[in-house]
Image 1 (cartoon, rainbow, N blue to C red):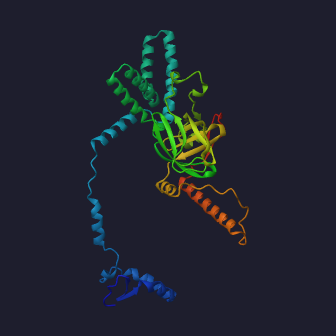
Image 2: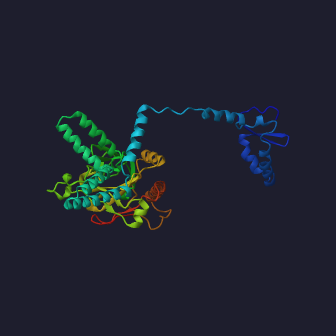
Image 3: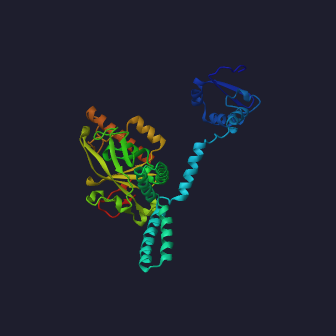
Length: 394
């Protein structure tokens, strides 16, 4: 073809002969040609794509590709603002100042307990030098505990406010915020996904009101719809007896869950802190909605769970991928499976409604399996009993 200019043509070259085929003919042409010729055509054509007549080939040329690449090679990095530099510097200082959540923090607290015992012995023995040395070591150790520091700074804020000392109040507030930023229970803002039993996977959004964590449903179900609070938890510091209300046992601080050796290896921590909370339950249509005792269990920076204690039901939450988040927002969550089940598929002669129900269940089950693949194997948890000494996370 001497003038191959039509846009709907595709060009290739075999030896010195240029062949032009309209798009509508390509598939038909290949189907009717002998297999041997098609193989030769496939092998020969790519070898001459960049010949003297390579302008006929409609792929971008090397020069054009290089030109496109240079558009992104000399881009200057965005300059960091003074506010961002200040924040990054503060985060680095806080990380160096406080112990990391996990075994480092648990070992630090064990060391504090040992030093407290040694301090009592030094006081009883009357050794002033030993007492002062232990007190100094104890102060240094306690200063590395972010939760203890947060609690003490909150007390300092309240005292400064009562005494109308604005400068001291602001100082205690800044120190409290620095310590708070290192506690995982105060860094759970945003979207999470957990499996609500037969309702399937649902998405929640976590926000804070002071030291209270509040979880709203982004995708709901027939019992608790979207937009409603699914659970909340009081995260006030609970390290010292001054925070305990001895008139009510329900307000006693919860001890951590001690993990087995196998579970601690998997999760990288020997114990899981717990916080008291309230979980929402309701009948269909959000009827007879009520709160029941619950527990927020902090597993780390990437996972947590919430337990509805009276019914021994626990949901394990993790961050959704962007793909899963968009899918759930689009579909409104994973629909629950129909109550009806089949031992075997219905026959083709069954009623149309039964066939539709069966097809819908197959589709929903497939979606549920896809979501499980997206979430990964971490979303399996066995909650034994409310008074169990150990909780196994699989």
